Image (cartoon, rainbow, N blue to C red; front, top):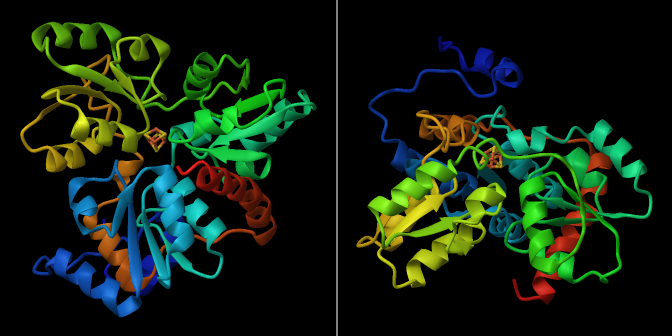
Length: 336
Ligand code: SF4
């Protein structure tokens, strides 16, 4: 139950994850958020997997690479990060002088959680001659143990920018790693992590859906398992999937990634039909429960009261910054 007193809510914020206070139901949250952006020189960066209302008030909507690039170049005093914890952490790593707010500190990530830093350190020590490339969906602790960070937009090019005989560990997503191994002919050692949302799609149900929609193209994120990727007409990062649906002459698409992206796809191509790929049970498991912890109400409250704020240890921040910078430099040199 919500508490009445804001000071009490602030005290509880680390434990609860967000400011648990009631909001005056008469407030127009869209207007209020616009006001707060101007008053506080704040920018809202939102991931494509956020709920539609949050996407509609964001200054920038993107995938992990785009969001990191925006976080790096913003002149705003406050970055409000409507995404999950590791994304806000990345923004803080790049902008130590700025206040970074996250509507709900408990918006985590199953993929990031699948790589605890102490276990990964042991794994890395067992492969001393390997360079570590980590997908950006990981904690600052894993980033600090990595040589280069990548996203699904640039993973292939980053791997290909290294000498062919360079031994590589790829973490934490085994599906993305296997896909890059297949595309590049490399034999990277894979950490056994995965995203709970992208592993849930059912090959059988997608196949049945294709029979009912014979003209629909299947598009998939490389975090999906290989059995699903084999059905895909196009595989790409969230941004690449969005662009594909805008440019392709197809009129129907079965989309195998988190459902939040359908909002932008439908907005940008109103005459096309987008069908979420079905999960292998009847739950709404292709909605990321972590991403969806953020709500418009929590977004408003965190901007109004500037809490919860993401803070981090400075030594960890500096260690995690190096591999992110390397990614941004390689991406810039490749024009990504
Ligand atoms: S969709 Fe998967 S990888 Fe993305 S935040 Fe959710 S759990 Fe993490």
